[in-house]
Length: 362
Image (cartoon, rainbow, N blue to C red):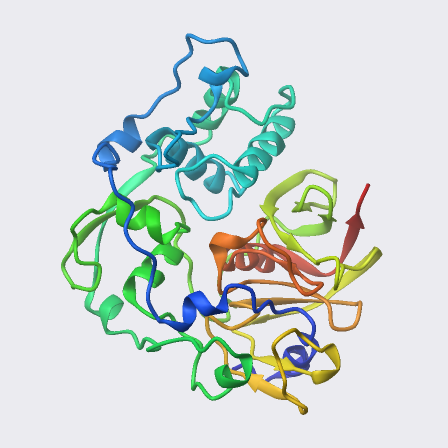
């Protein structure tokens, strides 16, 4: 828990922003079942995946394949990894088409001066491949540290009960490894059928992205610097710009709800807390929370505000991580701006104090 300087007060400012949606799924302390029927989804298949350019640009053949059975697709995994590495985040890499992927493709196309497109055109695919010549899937050997944890047996569904935990850690190695490599848990299992993800020495296939790190990150590089952020409540995304107005990064986001909408107008970044604690105030009256007095929840990736809190000048509002990265951009929040833990950390490492935050809506 952070205990120095201006960071001391940030946990208390995170009062209105955590979501309890989906908490029951984590309460069991278990992950969803494996994805079946993905024998073609191998390291070699993902790295070799290419676009069928025989169809018209923007037509069905130009789309990262969306299969009727909604199983992960090698080409879609490749596209998502390339977007992630270019800092046009598709959210959790899951090998499936969807709004997050389409939004990232459209933002990347615009940044490259290409026609707006939510499907994968040949020109767009070529531009993506040109961003990196490195493989998009790689082998990783599970270490002793990976499997020893510490892990939390289960995350209680009720926030009041979460306050009793010593830490809001991962529940098992599968959850931890998936988040480290920006992946959905289902995709991690689909890429590694039958492999024990809780055994040191197991060689697994993962997305070749900068792994999510933990800690305060004071010694990590912070360039390029983000001077302005836009939060688009209609398209549900966050965009980061440098001082000259160049788009540096794109992130899908969950932004408020009808009950607790995100703010309007402008704000500024006041500060950043890595590994924040979370304080609930009963005046916010979250559904299902019956506590009559304030309580705090310890830090960790399953903390209601995730691994990062970017404090805004509007009281009690911030940009933060989440315990449920696979739901970002697909569910609502309690007013704040919720990113995956890795995207929130990426933004936090580059944004400067005093950066302008603009809230946009049609």
